[in-house]
Structure formats: C-alpha cells, structure tokens
Length: 315
Image (cartoon, rainbow, N blue to C red):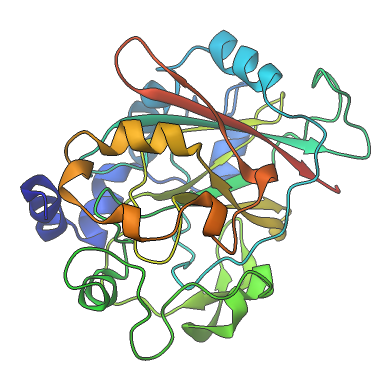
C-alpha cells in the first residue's frame, strides 16, 4: 500500500473530520446561498470554517469552464437508477471539499440536476435549484471511509471489493437503489438535514473522508473538490451519487470514467502502487456500469481533472 494512503488512514477520526471539514446544516447553507453552491456566508464560526473549506475549493474551477464542459456532455438524458451499494451511511455533511487528507490526483466534480420534463438541449431550462447532491467514493487504495476494516481484510489489505462475511460486497445491478439491495444494512434509516428514510449500512470506523453533499445553485449545479477515485476487486471505477429534494431521495445512481483516462491516472502515484486492475472488472464487464453515467472529463493546466455530468431526473 502507498505510505501516504496508509498514514492518512491512521490519522482520520470523525471528530477530526467534523472539526476540520467545515460542516453546516442544510437550512443554514440554503439561507446563506448567493447563487453559487460552493460559496455561502454566515456569521457563525462553524459556517465561516465551512466557507473557507468548501467555497475556496469549489471556486478553483471557474463557472465558465464548468458550464462549457457541461454543454459538451449529454443532456436531457434520464439517469439510470442504480444500487447505492453496501458502503453508504448518512454522513449529513454539507461541504464542497470532501478530501480531508486523502492523497491522490485532484478531481473537480460538477453535477447539474435537470428536470427531464422541462429540459432542453442547451441546458437553459429545466435546471433544478436547491436540490441536494450527495456523493461518496473509495480512496486511491480502494477503501471507503467508515468501512476500512472490512474493506482491507476483504481484499488482503489493499482494497474494498471482495465481499467479506456478512455481505459487504456490491449488490447486483438490479438491487433496489434506495435500499442498498438489503446487503450490509444496519436496519437503521437516515434522518439527517437532507436525507430521510434511506437504509444505512453499519459502519466499522469513524471515517468520513470522500463523502459529502452540496446544494445546487440557480443553474442546477453542485460542485465538489475530491480526489480521483481508486478501484477495488470486482468493480469498475465509480462515484456514487444521490439527489435529494425536500429530504426525499429522487435519484440513486453511479458515475463512471473512460478506460483510457483510468489508465492515465492509475499510471501515477499513489494509484500505481495498487496493482492488479487488469485482472479485475473494467467498464465493459462491470454489471452495474451504464453509459448514461459516463462523466465528461478534461485535464486542467495544473494536472488536476474536471469531471462533469448532467443528471436527468423526473422532478
């Protein structure tokens, strides 16, 4: 395992994440929102910390660049409902920068929520504002926060895909999206500021890295700063996403990346030290992969990547 990844896992704790990650309530964020999902202002010290963390990072990619790339991506396409998998729990965290201290290649993510009943091809109508977009994914070594012990033991210390006892592997592609396919569930349901009623998995540790949510702005866009996700046995590279409106989950899906891009990113540290991907699942053989979830990606001048997708829902 890459030493930076190993060291970062030793440092993480939920209390540390909440102290440094800058979480604020959904109501506070919407009330303070000024037309940009990553820039909120409020008088409280906690929210000021959130503005510093999420606002600065989300602004790292200009709005014009995001809008231009979203215009190149497929539009007015209904997103496919997918399983939420066995690694979701309600982190209840509104923040734009979800990296915490995870090592990896910086990835700016922009997701635009579109109401397909009103959507037009240039994206000028049908944008859904004040929806909550929630994402989560594994780290560069293939492990999910909150589930490190199960993920590592299941994959010989390297990643998080081989199902351990108790059914922690990804459910089949036809499992109900909002319920996680009934695998690894704790029997508890979410009751946070933006998600109510979705079945949660039982966590094994207090990590929260690479998890968070943002509200969509007036153009229906939510932005995140994260790292490029790693891979694990049995699954192609993916990012999980949920869209919540009025605390109801209206979409549970997954997004994916072009295989040529994956080869490019994974040839570099820290990803290059996690070997064996060629012997595991790629897009073509993944049972959950769907073309509607393929992200449109451009490499930036600083070596980071901007990945965008239009999420079509029936609002």
